[in-house]
Length: 355
Image (cartoon, rainbow, N blue to C red; front, side):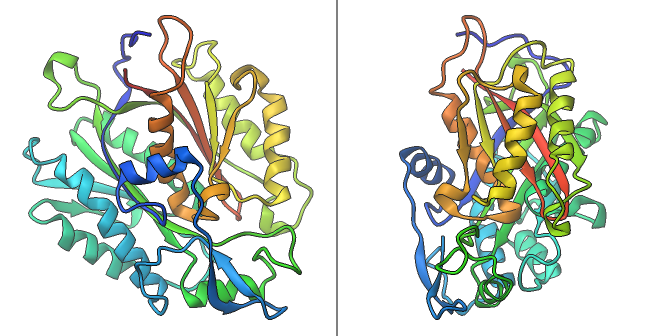
């Protein structure tokens, strides 16, 4: 299997870091995800039947921490690895594009506190963020951040950008919020979620010839697609999968896609039936893009609902999986990753591994 010639507009993934209940580093999380490890725990919050709410919780964090405190701790831990990759690149300042929880997803959080924690952890590199570089779009937010990062890199104003996602639904307030709204999986809610948490960051660079690379890429962003579902989860409307269908169609139509199928699909969604039905409809309408036979990894099976962190975690998982996946002779394995927010935002991307 050989690496094809890269297009001049493809984005290289040159560094990553993750922090989840499965591991405090990217490697630990990737290996545990690949091994099928699950870590769900009973929390101190009770549901309507008096049973403890279960979730995928990083037990190293104190149960009484606020959502802001948990998100900050997860994000700072995940940030250490990609920052280490900057040592040889002589970077002084770095744009940050960050996926964050969508409204009505749990307790409120203080964005300024999280950004201050990231700024402090990144010194002496100065991380730059603004209102236009944070995306409060839950599971779809990471893909919006990727799309914006690609645009920034193509302006050639920045040789490197940092893209990430962080979320926690495991603070006491968020656990109670979802329990009150009948969302948590339990004896009285068979079609619910297991709250989760996590963070992931990626250092991305614009395409450069292999002879001039400062570091070997871990993989490549081939294409991104954004859409919106007019009949969202929050609207309690019939699920027609219009948004996800459109996103998959955009990926198929991208010049870099060609006529190739992807080798694997990774979903950022929960195990709720709404999302399963949505994927089934969009899959059938875009069968030419999908693996044959279909292989799909659902993040909720391992980490519960990780919200805005799901896209970053699934991208890290995909990079690990692509190393082991076979493709046609002369081709590099590809993965499709997608995420849909409760409010209707949709994002997806295709990546290729590096061999």
